[in-house]
Length: 373
Ligand SMILES: Cc1cc2nc3c(=O)[nH]c(=O)nc-3n(C[C@H](O)[C@H](O)[C@H](O)COP(=O)(O)OP(=O)(O)OC[C@H]3O[C@@H](n4cnc5c(N)ncnc54)[C@H](O)[C@@H]3O)c2cc1C
Image (cartoon, rainbow, N blue to C red; front, side):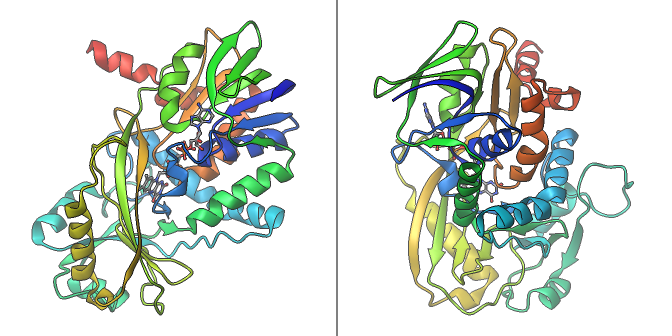
């Protein structure tokens, strides 16, 4: 494949790349998305699909603010997806819970949530800590071992695969040229970007966005940027469909709009070649059963692991290259939650060719500062 003369090439057709590409095309640019395909590690195909604010950004207020801003844009974002694609991504925002199975877990939640008494100016979402009886009044099916939990009214969830499908459909409807099975191996720059593909094709573009998930680590230095991301494994168990019993998403258990129950999701510092830890899946299942004994007897019909794209401090990296004008990078570990902000705030900034001051906190340069401290 040889493509010449596009305004913007986006490397990566996951949630981050496809969302931003759609907005760039809506802004009038000719956009091509190059996507490696099924052999790639793709967080967008295996996530837990929470649209979540609770506990986010504890040591980076700007991230808490960014997350809350994204959540505030979510209804509008999915209404636009519906209008454009006919796909309802089933976004629900009833508020979400973290449940505690012992007093220490409840103490941790109490210490790490923004509970009453703080000013409205705080960027952190306001949470309530609830005791067992209050939890039971909202979640009648919780087990006797649940001693309490935290609740945040901003939290919600979505149908993950339908979301990715809708974002892809929307970007194609807006005129993006989507090229699957197109792995970029090298990037050259001579005022424009020349991307070499594994199949020996080339793509030439005036501007470039790196949204290749874990492969951003390899690609970023080719355009004078850095993306020191690592993979972190998450396992998810899926049950057969059952009658509706859970009206709120819990951080580790949620019932989808189609009736199945997702039990998630571990955080394992293991690379893609590491052994699968079946013990971790057992712990996840047993905790879910202690939270909701009514899950007993349901069959697990799917079990997968998938790799998060995680930066050294866990927060997103958004950057613009100084040495290669026109090159941008975007990566984050909450690409579902942040999809609305990526579509409505980040993409317009990239379209304008600048990342304004509020994005400075997300530059990978923050890691240089830390390294020198
Ligand atoms: C277990 C788990 C649970 C999660 N739960 C949640 C959650 O509840 N809420 C939430 O907000 N987020 C969650 N996430 C995170 C979310 O899924 C990711 O932040 C998001 O999917 C990242 O999207 P991405 O496009 O950056 O990366 P990816 O989905 O990895 O996409 C990268 C794309 O780049 C392509 N690519 C890679 N290299 C190249 C190359 N050289 N050339 C061309 N294409 C290339 C790949 O084919 C892929 O399509 C979870 C993730 C995991 C793993």
